[in-house]
Length: 265
Image 1 (spheres, helix red, strand yellow):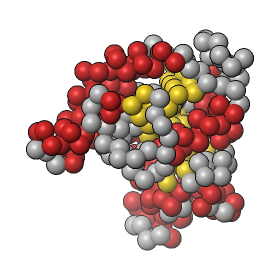
Image 2 (cartoon, rainbow, N blue to C red; image 1 turned 90 degrees about the vertical axis):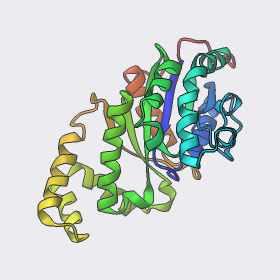
Image 3 (spheres, one colour; image 1 turned 180 degrees about the horizontal axis):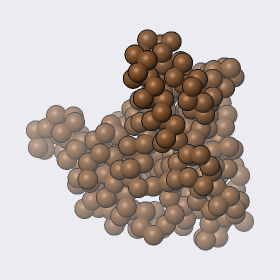
C-alpha cells in the first residue's frame, strides 16, 4: 500500500488531480482510494472513500466553539489527531494499491503546524509515501511567482519529511513553449536570473534567488525532491508521467503492484 499525499496552495488543483489520478490508476487496473483530509471542504469533485468530515467537520467546530474560518480549521486539524488511528483502519479495510490523500487547501494551517505533519505520520505509519506538491500553471509562468512557489515546496518538504515530486498543475492552460521555458528556468540559473530581472526584480536579489533555487533543486533523480512534471486533471496530460515518477520515488522505478494483491486481477 503506497500513499500519495497531494499538497499545495488553495486553488492549485489538488482535489481535481486526486480524482483524475485515481481514475488513471483504476483504468490501468490498479486499485486506488481517495482520502479527504480537509475538514473544511464544502464540495469535492469525487466521492471520498475515507472522509475526515465523518469525524471532524470544521463548520461544526466553528459553530460549537464560536470560531472564525481559520480558527475552526486550526482547531479541526488538531482534533484529527484523535481519529488518526480510526482513519488508518478505514484505509486498511480497502486494501488498496494506492492511497491518494487530499490535504486542506489552506496548507499553511496544515503543513506548518505541528498537528498536520503528525496526523500524516500517524495515518501513513510504516507504509511508503510520497508528497506531490502542486504549483498552479499561472504562477509557474511568472518568474517571481515560480520562485516563491518553489521555496514553499522546499519548506513543505522540510515540514512533512516526505520525498517530494513537484508538478505544475493545470498544464492545459500552457502552450508547449511556455512549458519549455518553465522547465529551462529551473534547470538554468542564469536564465532564471535573467527572467527575474526582466520581470523587475532587483538584480542582486534576483541573483540570490536564482542561486538559492539552484542549490535546493536536485542534481540527480536519487534526490528526495523530483522536479518538474506538468499535469492536467482536465485533459489527462502528464498523468502517465506522474505515475512513472511516483513509482521511481516509491519503488526505485520498479513498475509493480504493491504488497496487497489487486482484487481485479
